[in-house]
Length: 159
Image 1 (cartoon, rainbow, N blue to C red):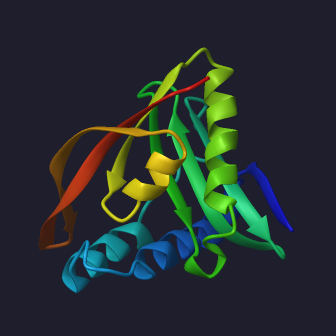
Image 2: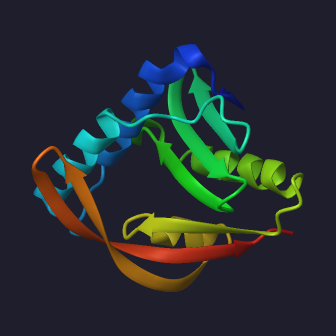
């Protein structure tokens, strides 16, 4: 059984593990191995806005293990992160996280959300109501290495 809850201070290691696993589990030709390795390296050193009052940060838990995470900013009106460990993908967890983010963001008077989607995630976001509004290159920089990755700009009207 999957449970969605607010992230807590002690969750950082589990959040990072699910975040990195999600990136490392990407299959297909959307990104090169080098781009994925750099992206995962950046995720392994990411910080999470667990206690920021301007952010909603949720995790998905299954069998006492963090298997997914979602973060949205009230100020930027943006879904900043939505990741699910590949072992738990295609079980509705990302949709559960997204639905809960939508509910909490709406309760703050926000009527739309923006997301900078990776190419492999675009079909998922389209299924849950996001529409493509553009595309851009995003530089991923970790230590001295960098890569430019194509990202899809998407927006969703919250009902």
